[in-house]
Image (cartoon, rainbow, N blue to C red; front, side, top):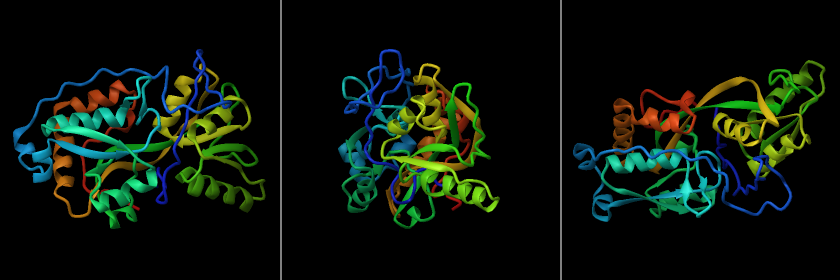
Length: 301
């Protein structure tokens, strides 16, 4: 399973929020989050043995340039000051600190990040990329998180993700939920003589969430951290539907054959072994996706 589709996980998203926390569709033009959750920064010390393995370019510059596409709450988005924050950011910042360098985040269209890595514009990418066999032909990945799919429904209006025939289900366009999961389930419905799922694809995840909050759809399918965040921010208007399912690995893409993949792997594993990794996951409420071993190119499909 791929949580960000191979052709591109998402378009640039916009989010608007009411003071009460519920999401609304009208007039969404912002790329920041006014009531964004806060998470304490984890203090990490430099590990000289790992820092010594960095490519010379990063040693001399003292930074790692990372292409990132925002927003995708809670993984990467902007706070009211315009600073890029989130779970992914805290994890990469901790990795950079372990290596004795700074993370320099540069905004980019999602579909342009991997080509820019191949061209040498960015040292790495960080936008909830799913490590897939197809992508591994272009770049190498250092994995750092396991993600599943989680449906949501309006509170008190149950929808079974395994039997949603005839239901309106919101997804973000080009995600695996859009390209793989819902089409497969809809096809199964039709094979059983039931009405297909009425898939509603939105360019922005925030719009898919809003559609559910406003009752325009019966359910929503998204990555588990995204759904968990949406439920938290919706002021009790939506809730989880069923349990999380599937499994895929998020990874940071780096140039094919670059020694940076192994260095990042070593830094992530150090954070895991020292408990700092788990602390960051807990700070963002995503500990259910924590991994015990970082890998290079860990895709199964």
